[in-house]
Picture 1 (cartoon, rainbow, N blue to C red):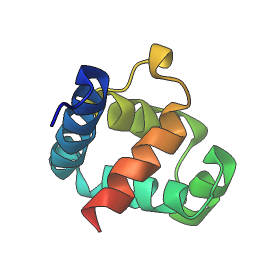
Picture 2 (tube, one colour):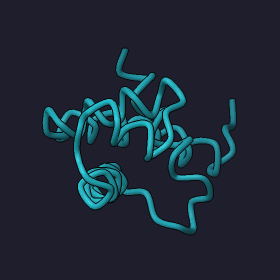
Picture 3 (spheres, rainbow, N blue to C red):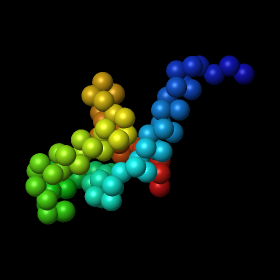
Length: 87
């Protein structure tokens, strides 16, 4: 059996992202859980009673810890998929 190298690379990257999500702080996990529920940054701000800047910082940290760059496409969706993979 032969498996396309791109498929293998994609699977390994997803596994790595799921593993990296364990490195998130408790607050980052809260933010990511709300993102998974479809919350916008403004909705996260209201739910957690934090500033816009704090939300942006947490979201940025989530992307960085999951190894997501702007070139990856929709980082928010990819972060949520990594979160759901841990469930």
